[in-house]
Length: 112
Image (tube, rainbow, N blue to C red):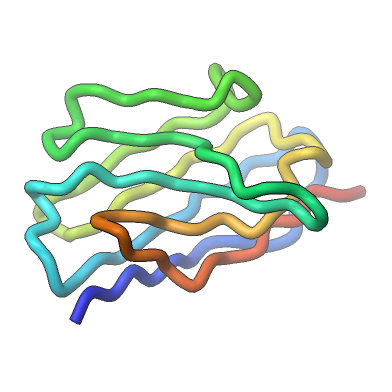
């Protein structure tokens, strides 16, 4: 069955960095676009970043452009989200998405 397992979340101070990972299994990872979404308390879920199957093309939410980088390693069936210059408003549960399936999410909290 399809599994998407996120890791790497945690508590970080404003201006800090975190790297999230999503390990995928149960489908042909190298043929699938991958996305990261986030949902803050009381807010709708929003697309943070997306990467095509080959990794050639990416797109980002305006709120994270220039600070976040999505990448993938098709040999490891893993997609990453490098998050720099984190702000309190980046606090949310971050989830991996592919082919109509969701991971369980990982909490990112940005606070001093």
